[in-house]
Length: 340
Image (cartoon, rainbow, N blue to C red):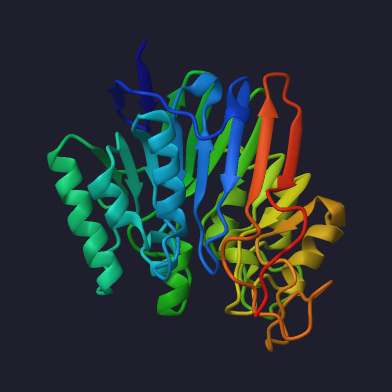
């Protein structure tokens, strides 16, 4: 069987191997939000043990993402069919170099932005080495990636956004790196999950109705590349610079997942409140830093433990979608266990 990536001007045909991360995915789709602390790593298991997809590679501190990938590959004896690295910051590509070196990766999507950090340099070198071994690289520095589509049986991955450099309204250097993030949408059985990296849609502390930057661009382009999704992994770990009201309205999610750790005051109470204002129920909001408390006045600190520094690894989240489109989301551990 063949699969293809469909882009704006060219069609790419690739052969693939398949893999399963967990037995719960045998008759449906499984998505594991790995608790890497202040960073992101998401592993998707395709139905019928037909492969895995990796979105981001975790924080440079610790090896939680690498360990999860290693377990998955060991259990299935198969390769990584698609790896998406949202942008160049080290909390997104911490284990990327090791993963590219140690495992077979069929396709890699990246912004192509050039950074001077050690983590990025290792990642870039590993990506070039992987390409020499046959990995197909889709970089916004080489071609337009927005509009591209990967098909894996009944699962579609659509790239909605991604640039090699920020060319919009002025932003700080760090926010400009965030704004060019690759944004991907997964679709299966009539359901969808939006994975928007660290995209930017507003100024921190800005007006509640501010709609700007990359999120504003995507909202304007939503008729061509629809954002509507049942589940959203909240952009930029729940920063107030993202999850603008217009973006949330266009996505119209039923479930929200904040992938965050003990750093930067994420997720913020303002981001959480915008989701609640849009109609998301509080019990449909999940976070990988349960019980965490920070000194930041912006941090969402509902149900926290006093003086709790939530450690990575205890708040992983599992999403299951069966062939009928029924969704189940649960924490792997019923109660948060780590606090120091």
